[in-house]
Length: 297
Picture 1 (cartoon, rainbow, N blue to C red):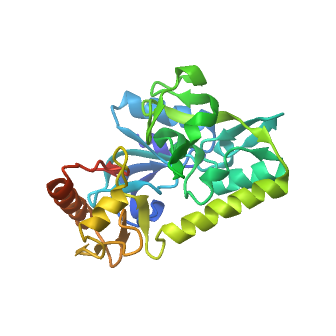
Picture 2 (picture 1 turned 60 degrees about the horizontal axis):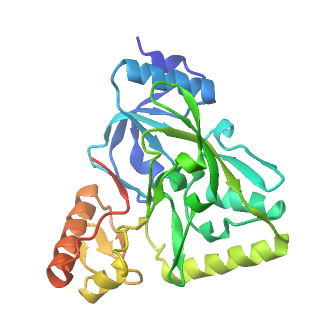
């Protein structure tokens, strides 16, 4: 019985994942779901668990490289209205996991809530940002979304809902302990501020990103984490790898920690370039660069 056909939003077979990532790379998902609401999500999770079908959760696909062979899994994308709701009680903001970061910042500006402006220009969703503890480094200070979390509402892979208080969460540099859950929503403690001042901060961060990042071709943002006390981009640049190309993948000439999908690029091309960069940097500086992007093999 093809149970996924009876959902309000029926599942799809062999959905091309390149259509759901900013890299525009990747094969098909075995099954692909965009649940209508929480009840449907729980139904999907329980059915998949019962059948030992691996579950992968997809946000905006902005930090992801999918294998050319695709994903032998049930891929779930939480982009329906039920997972994009936003509300506030005084200075406590609650946002659904599927809420795009740019839309959340607009809500914050309108309601005079400050604290998340540093997320401006990051092309992701709340859920994805929390899973990897997204953020930026400004004047050698690391600003991360995990610093503002009061609690996170999650679903485990048995279909049970849990509230994880901030003190039970472990956020580190581009990581968290939320990987074993499906993130549903989160609450953030913010500060009150004038909407114009908030917009000015957002604009400053947007300008900073536009001046330093390369969005001329499809990409997945920074490929590697910064090693302690240094910059992955600086190391790659110092090795003379800007412009290095394998197949359709090329190291950006503007930001060396970006790999661009220049010409019908495959995941194989990107992975070959990643390995080359790691090898060259390790040989010259003794540093093994660790990928920041998620890789679905």
